[in-house]
Image 1 (cartoon, rainbow, N blue to C red):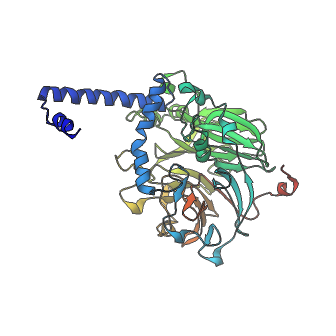
Image 2: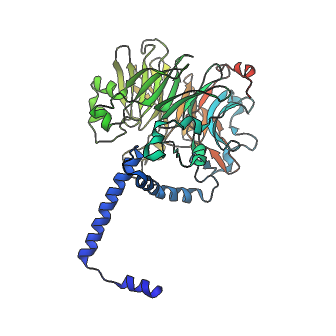
Image 3: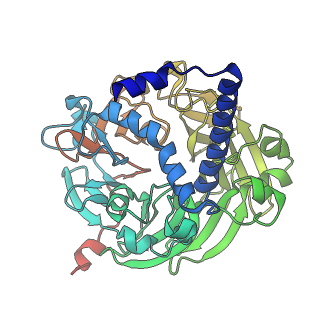
Amino acid sequence: MLNKIEKILSLKISLRVFILILLLILLFLIFFSGVVRHTVIGGSKFGKFGIFAESVSKFPRNIGIVIDRGLNRYLNNMTVVPIKDKREIDEISDLKIFNDNKFSGGYLIFSGFSPDHQENIIHLYDLNKKKYIWKWVPDPVEILKNEPLLNTSKGKYTLNIGWNADDLAYSRRIFQPIHPLLMNDGSIIFHPGAGAPLVKLSACSNIEWINYNFFHHSIEKINEDKIMATLTTKINDKNNIGKFIKDDGYAIVDTKNGEILKEESVVNILIENDYEYLVLGRPWGNNIIHLNDSQPIFINDSFVNEGDIAFSSRHLSTVFLYRPAEKKIIWLKSGPWLAQHDIDYLGDGIFSIFGNNNYLNMPGYKNKNLNEKNNTKLYFFDTKTNKVTTPFEKPMNSNYFNRQANGTQRVIEKNELFVDIDISLFFMDKEEIIWKFDKRVDQDNKSLFRWSRYFKNNELKLDWMNKTKCE
């Protein structure tokens, strides 16, 4: 056998043949890349070969995971990460308090991996009691069994959330509710990914409705009857914009039945307000907008009107205020933040912006900044003066603070900040981190978060808990 191998290795080939082989390999790689891209965006032209090609393309990433995580039991669960520093988590509680004198309690609503259920469930956590007080357990298979995308590629399709119709056990484990919104009757509304259905569960986790559009990122309550949700719209599906650009927008959704009452395209809003250059005056990319927050405004003052919407477009590094009643952009600002998430209105003309400051167009630096000190800032943008400040610079430069590419924030009275940074939840003032929360899975692993919510002690109505009896 060794002699045969040696003979093969000793064979001489001409330079012409060698170049021809290289050209054939190059052509195959170009073809293979096209097949992968076609399959990833939902095409089924290549059938099983397309599915195989997509699986092969993930191999380098999986090798990286193996190297990073070792032989961890949660290796293939992308919603669980190893605990790198055992000091991160308190021995008694998932909650670690750094300053008891400043600790004010409250409540958390978040999704995290449950070893008991072997999936990500939604938790309601009482910070005062250091105790989990309610849970919602979605049925991923039931929720996604009628998802239209699952019918492409001969019944198998990998959504952005990693769902795989041929591996339901794995799919259950990586299904994760995002930005869960609690209603006054104990029902909860969420979506499970970056282009997935919007779902409402009762307090007892029964499905009340499912809207099979492609929702992602923020879900905000307007009132008990209506919510605002970010989604990839179909408004421009039949024109050239819709054919080439992922068209993000917002929808107002009826909470009783999940029907969309109103929908607008952010691409259209920008073009119609003479910001066409932001959308089309740049190198081509399918996901140009990457809208990650549609934030309704609930007050009238000198700077905003009730019904206005503040938008955050990550891939444009741009935020703007839009007035639907006039179909007018009131102001728009690009930077100094880079690839930011989540915008809120704080009153007096000031907006808070959670800036991840990730470089998006440099190979090898997609999810980080070369200058580490510039990563992950909370900006205050004062529209009165056009001035930008970073008031939480000191705690965000703490060694405890994680720097990631995702997350959401809530500023309280302009002096305190809650932030979900994906692998931990933090609460801080302008001087220090007051507490940190991690969802433990076991001694070696913790769960990722996906757009969690913090509430002060008097902000949640929990009387439904005493009235609810689940079977």
